[in-house]
Length: 175
Image (cartoon, rainbow, N blue to C red):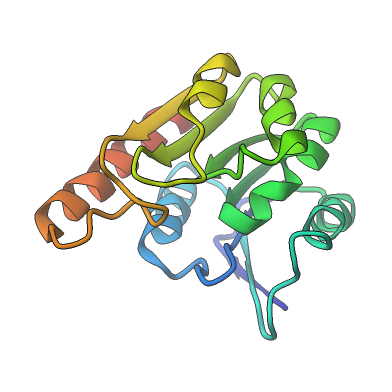
């Protein structure tokens, strides 16, 4: 794995963690990175240089990264949302994109996460558990008909509109 630094804001950075096949240069994470930078964060983005870890290893990897890098904010996509319990333990605010809420530890951690937590998912994503998301008492940004990449397959205009809505939602959340 490799870390890429963007911005030169002082203080602890925001840490952006990728999904299994969805790195920080993909549209959803790029939008969030852009908004973090615009909000004055220094951003550390993790990129896999080898195969990503499995579901069993990911929570510990995220725990180690949080301990070693000491971010003030975390963004995770899919696979790395398995680290939500570690972030909740650290009291870290964050944005959890297509979180794997069906994993019991993750679903329970959403409810005890930092109050400044945003859960983002699409209703056509089988891993999105809208009931748990809304019952978590955290902020939720939900995309009707969007899949696990927050896209609308076969409808590029709807996908572009979803990215615009994500940008606006993240900007409002960060303000």
